[in-house]
Length: 105
Image (cartoon, rainbow, N blue to C red; front, top):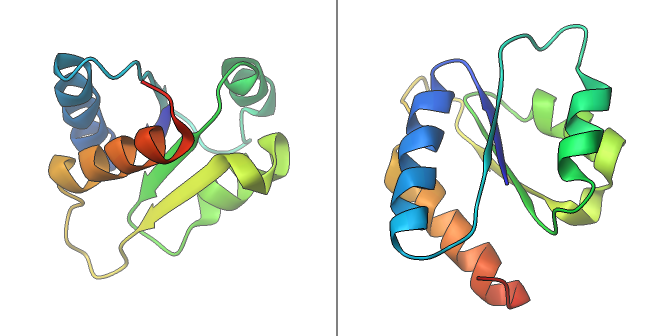
């Protein structure tokens, strides 16, 4: 699963679409508000998920919240704090890498 918000959600949406075209079973949880953090929604969505990718254009503040709710071992971060948008291809690469590393497809 990919958890994204704000401008990064667009790139994440495209990456998820591309991953599904490659027969990778992946979902997107787009957060519309980040405060207060939607713990119950994230916990419910992640309950049967093996890997969560959190792309964000900062140093990982939301990833910390996701890790707090679901555990650090499930979360893979993609951070960029230089003002440039995270391209869908970078998120797609992370999806593919995490799925193949853990044997999920």
